[in-house]
Length: 295
Image 1: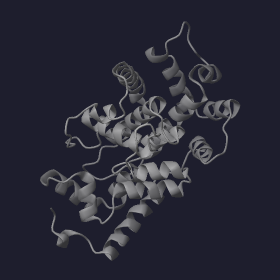
Image 2 (image 1 turned 90 degrees about the horizontal axis):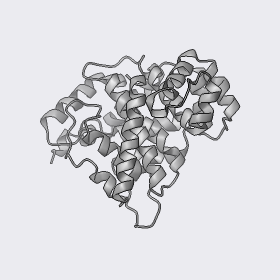
Image 3 (image 1 turned 30 degrees about the vertical axis):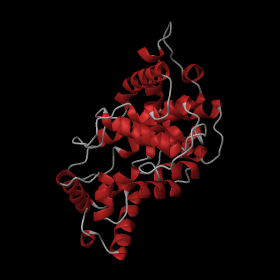
């Protein structure tokens, strides 16, 4: 247990949280394609035609999508050399998620982060959590499954805001984490008075991401229980994906604490062994194909 005297007074915590949230203004502005895709999450439809137009106007994203569709993961006879053809093969949802991930990664790579923070590890962890959350939501009855990819992609944006807006305090949290028996989120609560999960949800509210995704991100370290036979809350799916990703070493921190339980987090959904084996194989293949775009 940590003495209560270590914890911050509420007023000090409010000041720190305000400074961390202000770091949103230090992030680079959304690109036109990212702005459009973020708007689509809030209910604005993005058709096949509109998505194709958006991608074709961004040469970097277009090149990456064509490179991805021609990779071993989606190997076809003959080379795919048009965005519209790539869309027809991958599907609108897959392309939208991939472009969203690429665009978020490219934006955040320009953020000014402190010592001890690896943007490459952050991007890879976020992409892995997004891919696995999406895979899980396809196999496990889930509340709001369409939000799984975005929830995984943005679940830790609060950690980035703390690193940018509170670099000194971030260093203290890191040191406390390394020398105490506490989890990262417990160290945040003690030293900051709030957690990155709460901060992430607040940031998504400002970005007008749908509320079910905000709730899943807010609760992903402490998801609610649910009865067998009921759809799993999205936060449970995100929690399982996040725990698994950390357990295989795809974590934000190099020295991430893990209980080594691996797929046990996913086994809690009682998937048939052959289903889980195929799902994890699909995840590994997709993540390997996409990882080069998130360094």
